[in-house]
Image 1 (tube, one colour):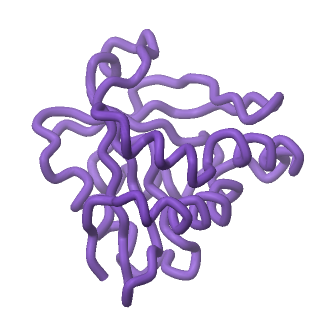
Image 2 (cartoon, rainbow, N blue to C red):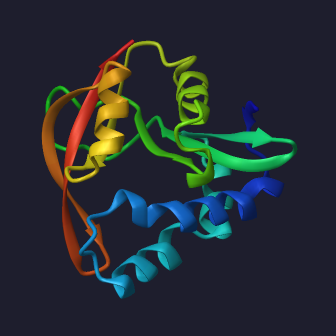
Length: 166
């Protein structure tokens, strides 16, 4: 497996991974229609093309034998959260790995490569019911500094805001 900068030709694969894994990051009782709505508005190949064209965002893909099995997106100019420890720093907006590769070290490889080049601190948001992801980020030095809400269609989720000092 290897991590490399994403290119326009990767956006379909990124969208495929996002669509397959997004629901795993949400509470189990999230209505299917709200998941589908969020995915159709935020996780399409076109959305990822826009991210690649945005100078404040850096997108990487995780490849195995030429297939995209994961990707990450860092936004260097995210919106303010009104959480002093989390504002004014880059945000890890996406870190998705195909579920077939969970538990294989693939996510660790992707996260390590993604954090390379971050000079100070980075934040992320994770659903408060996503114990697997919370544990992964805690093992990688992220600490909870607050909480925020995440709009998934008309469904509102509670997200933890986590920060890592690098």
